[in-house]
Amino acid sequence: MEVELKYLIEDKLAQERILQDQYLQETMQPGSYEEIHMQATYFDTAKLDLCAHKMALRVRFENGEPVATLKWGGSSENGLHVRGELNMHVSEEFAHKPDIEVFAGSDIYEEIAAAAGGKELLPLMEVEFLRRQLMVDTGRSIDVVSLDLGQVKTPQGSSDIAELEIELYSGEREDMLALGSRLAAKYNLKICDISKFQRGLALLAV
Image (tube, rainbow, N blue to C red; front, side, top):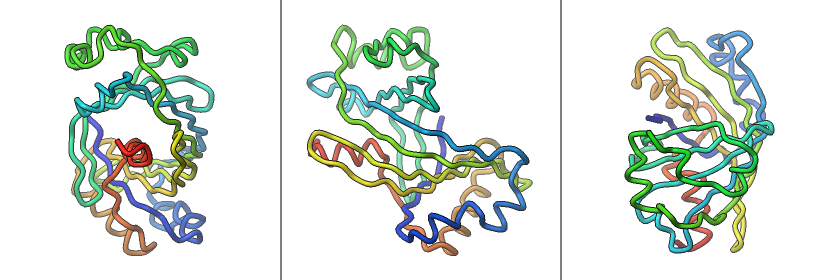
């Protein structure tokens, strides 16, 4: 299960400064800062069967390493996104020709098989961005704070990405929400209830 807050960062100065915020620096776990180049392709059947079942399948290269991710269900309200998530390390061959059988044995397998079993998976959109992230320990929760800058790309157009995500790693959800409120007020962040994938779907008019 993935639990995270998502905000849009429209102020370019805030994009440069937010990860240097004094509170984040004071609570940051030593050595946790990293930069990750993300290049993802989302896949679906020709009839968008996964979308119809509220599922999203992506293969993302994270600093060159391919990871397959399935997301499903969940909700998003006031910037808080809660959904099922399953990650699998895969081969480069899989990245170009994904197969739902990689999820065999998981709790979600029967559902994804019912939606797309035996059907070819085709590329739907690409998402490319630089993620700069760190982990903070507030004493009540450990959260991953990520700044994402890049683009969602589809055959029908593209959309810029400038987002801050705060993902609950462990501890109290209320503490994560308090951290989000604190940063949103200080840096004039805007609540975002749509994912990068949903932004791509909007460009595709799906």
